[in-house]
Length: 75
Length: 376
Image 1 (cartoon, rainbow over the protein chains, first blue to last red):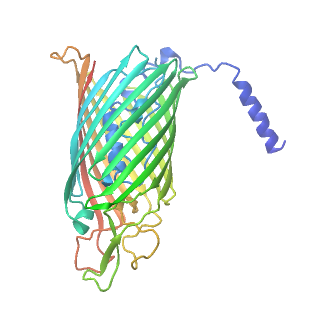
Image 2: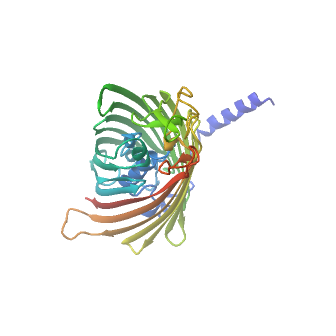
Image 3: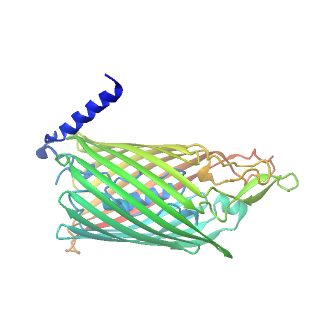
């Protein structure tokens, strides 16, 4: 099977998998630890934003430092 | 002036912190202080957020940097100065089902620099709320001027595209992935900074000319992070970020952090961060002659360098008796000690040696954040 055809089959299988419901492997009742405030990516946004600003003023790199997008899956 | 660079995102990203649920109503008042390398910066900061009907949220922020600078750049080529930067921000969020839409705007100004920044983001919970995906776009418009030179005025146009994914991997482990592309176009150097070049006729053996940067820069950053819940109620986090840009800077950042609560009131943090980067393509500590090449830089931010940070934090949470409208409150004290070490940026305060043989520059900085937070 050529690599292109293999890729096509993989895409078809991937698309077909979207029709089935994905079961959460961590059940809601198992999320007590994940929902603990100590597991927050960023418990104090005002302080972490300041540190990001402080580092970016003194180093050449920037970006992707934020802790955004951190869902705990606990709602 | 150089401090304002790339601060546009300050206070913007937290608005995309959670999809599916809006963060609690909260006010933070912070005093921040930086002291290192002859520079002291301190000031207050305020961030307030309030939600309505569990669907809408607004936020407002205020931030001040009071700068007193006698940095090595300043004392070798200019005079110490004081200045103040003020930033205001406002944001709005709308939660619909498992999707959160957010928009923010901020303005930052000081006597020779003004920056307006707008950002929009969308984040969604999916796969049984185990995965959160956020997309965001930020646009910045900066106006650059130069004190004492009414004829100089220029602009910078910034665009940032980002995506983050947060994944609950197990009942004790969360994984995070972030990718950002940042493009900048305009006047990207500091209008005051100078580069040095070999000049046999000069008393020191070298002389100065103005730095010149390319007018475009594009950088990509990819970050991976993981946070574990330990068996005895504590958390361990590891982060790694790789950065690369069109000025040939490649950088790596690695960090580990440990959080340990004690009873319900106290939380202790300790973390270590390491950063390393190589030299920008057009950087040199000492150019062989005047106008040696098209682009010239001697900004230590573009030199090969490393930084080591060791930080501690302690938080105390309590129910304030005098302020009944506050459900709870917390006091946080955070301290970081940072060492910056440069591989090709020399300390020109050392006189009497041949140009280019001065000792390499390094300095330590102390960074303090003292927060009072109230949830209402």
